[in-house]
Figure (tube, rainbow, N blue to C red):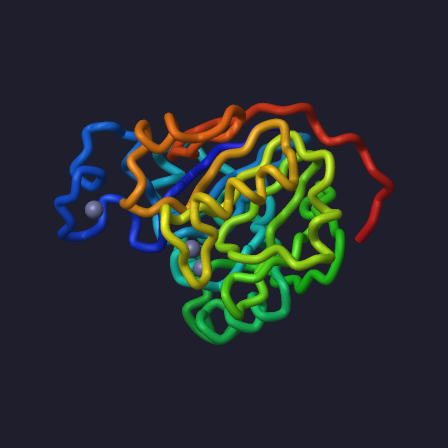
Amino acid sequence: MRVTILGSGTSSGVPMIGCSCPVCTSDDPRNDRMRASAVVETGGRTLLLDTATDLRLQAIRFGLERVDAVLYTHAHADHLHGIDELRVFNIRQLSEIPCYGNRDIVERIRAYFRYIFDREGAESFRPFLQLHEVTGPFQAAGVPVVPVPLWHGALPVLGYRIGDFAYLTDVNRIPDGSWCLLEGLELMVLDALRPRPHKTHFSLGQALEVVERVGPRRAWLTHISHLMEHQATNKSLPMGVELAYDGLTLEMAEPKPERSGS
Ligand SMILES: [Zn+2]
Ligand SMILES: [Zn+2]
Ligand SMILES: [Zn+2]
């Protein structure tokens, strides 16, 4: 199973438009952060985590040629507004693409992108998607997935666990019932926006507390703002925790086969 970080940046991306700070003007490509997204390849299937604003560029830069399903974490613009790029995958694959999320995500996608779901007119100028509301473990293109309910300020969002990998972006609180879904993780990708606290994201310090409590073998921090320089921040992190960067690939064992579900 392979996980590729397609984007490790906060909603504005890094560099930010018009900013001349040392991180935004850095020559280190690891300080160049597209909007947060990742892709999981397992058992011959490709699961995309969010359709970030930068999806087209991410797909081209990191060789994403197939999308068997999309797992949406929430419906904020930075995680969603690349949705129209899914058209290309429809055409390449000659199939609809199933998309998963909680009720809030499904309702917002329908409301924000009416042209996709209005079955009248402009038939070829919309992505062909199936929206599925998830309330518990499910299979996406045959891959067992466990949704992990999280809080992003007052918004109920989802993290996802696939085998012993978990992707938890845009979160500032993990509800009591979700900690048990994170036991025995090999790899965890976790939100860490910046050093000081924020109303809807974990700060660096809060993220490190979560890593310590969950105890994955390795943790990678994502959704990073221009307030954290890659190398300097990495030097300050404990063993086994690093800042993610665009194009980072992580390899791990294939998940064990489970009983079939819906
Ligand atoms: Zn975000
Ligand atoms: Zn900056
Ligand atoms: Zn968000």
